[in-house]
Length: 68
Image (cartoon, rainbow, N blue to C red; front, side, top):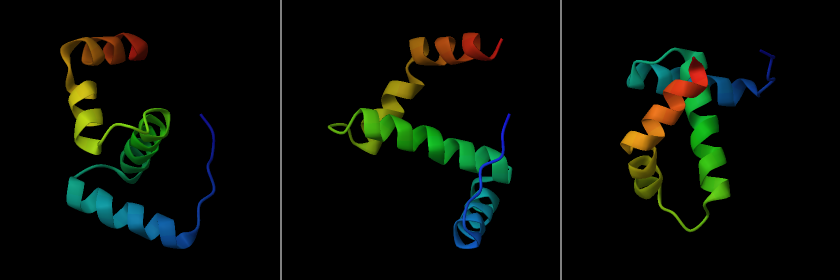
């Protein structure tokens, strides 16, 4: 695990979003990073398509295996 330095303004945005989404600040930042990585590696996909792909049963199972 490492430390990522971000601007105070971005940290405030993460804090506000985490409160709304009922996630920890770290979980919200991790979510945004993951979605950003997926968006960059799949530029032709919309956010909805990316989320649909990530919610597919095989994606969920591979994510579980990665954390075990």
